[in-house]
Image: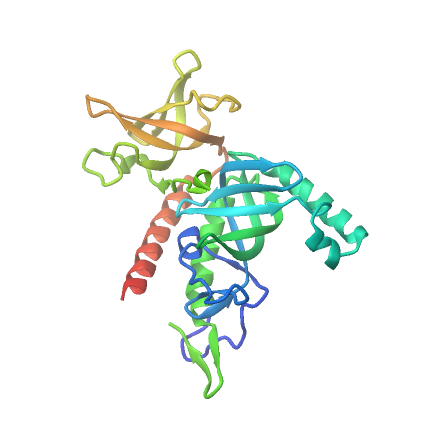
Length: 179
Length: 125
């Protein structure tokens, strides 16, 4: 993962669950259009992973579960959709079997989300009412008391040695390295 | 959506909670870690220590948490500064973190603060 600034990482972060601290996540730049992703230093960020203490929970059965994760640097709003069996939008795009599996997985995730637990959450980076949030795909409850510390160190390391060095594709000169 | 305008809690050590500290403010949201020295379910108060530093914590809202003297706990809540300039953390979230590496925790906290300060400075320029 170690790279120097003369050797930019020739990859993008598209579809990577980018590990960001909350203060970093909350300052992602919103897209000019809803069809485009949020960006960090001009790098598109479509998915994210966070780890922290669940401090808020708002459950609307069969609709959604909203919760907030506090990692000590900020609070990330998260939404877990629970409307797989009632959404006409999803019914047009997924088979009934797929929707059953997705609904079961979401229900299992929802059961894990309790105020006070430390959870690792992955999902898509989405916008809502001018802010940024995670539309949740996975929830994993962490029982290791050192998990948060490891997450902080990983986030700092990845930001310094990977995310800040990813090159931005450019139509004219190939790439530009961000420092 | 007001519900999700959650207060972010600042990561602090008990050493940070001296009256001259920028964290020592009425209503400030904080996250602390300390060893439980004593507690009373009757008064809803607990005392946590970290080295020679002590903090009182109101545990009235933490109905589901089991307390054990000598265990390490993490609390998130708001600081209530009393007229005698003594502080109580009104905990809204708590958990047992027995097994945590406190030395690594304190080192990582310094690293995190440094990274955050650098990041914000770079964003501002």
